[in-house]
Image (cartoon, rainbow, N blue to C red):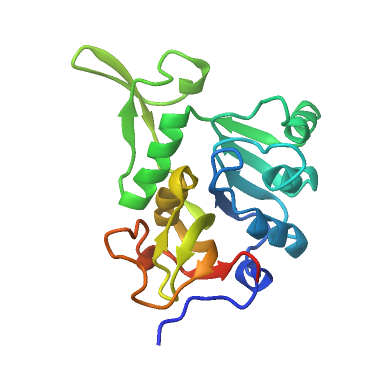
Length: 221
């Protein structure tokens, strides 16, 4: 019997190792798997490479992980905002590495990894510091820069409901990066508000099929 549910948040993240590349879903706080991040902090893994849309908000979630100095490098599109003080302080001190990627490029690099695409050409970033050292090409008279896919060891994502097979449905914009991150990681761990019996999720509403999810854990577990 296929049963991907975990008894606890701690069990779900127990094998995330030092130096792992971890994708974390969310657009700001929307869709951020805060319970899984707290479990990861308690777990103690260090030297992580984090892939996220931003570099954390305030003192919770991803910001708390950064505050604990567990992150060696972050790949994101929006690292600085009014309440990103933990990232700011560590970056200015030279204690965290940043790979800045425009948001559309970030999403497509993650999607490319899940789709098995070796890379793509995009006009975004051409002629800027972000394109230094990368292959460029003129296509139909327009300049493009080559971007590579982003793969991950783990993806931590948040969904509204899941079943024991790992099928997921999301709540509105909390969906954001979750579906593509689930496809781009070797191990996807989904935090859900509710685990429902098989057959209760409408197949037409399932966004992430269980084939892309290895573990499902209830956020209040």
